[in-house]
Image (cartoon, rainbow, N blue to C red):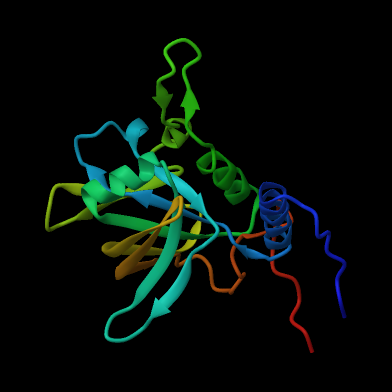
Length: 207
């Protein structure tokens, strides 16, 4: 089947059109909405913990060590924290309203001060209560802690292995050091799914 193509579009017009079609096409793909939290110094106020919602997490390899990968759009305060501390947690969320609210909270971008023009990072943990919404995971080899969200099915605690700059993104590869399981969940839910700019949960399997 042949698709009609306008042969008189400028390069800029065509580039903008492809970018928009790319966004619309990718929105049709269901993906995991997961939250990454970055390690921080134990002495850092919890309101300054960094984190971000991701839709790009995937497994990379199992041997010789489990690796996962994801990407971050730049500029990013979370990226700066990851470069500084190199440890992070990736959360497989329960498919419920609490997780949907968390995913929206952690997806907010930085804001610009209307007078000074200063870029101000978002503070998602300012809205969360310790022990209720999150706990901290101590990294014994140093003075770092990683926030662990309680509304998770599984949490992958990782150390940075590699990071690459590609366009306006970074591709991160993490070595999985530990996996925290929620012992209250016995069923496989499929996690929180994002598709067509809305959150979903897994339906029935195909016969």
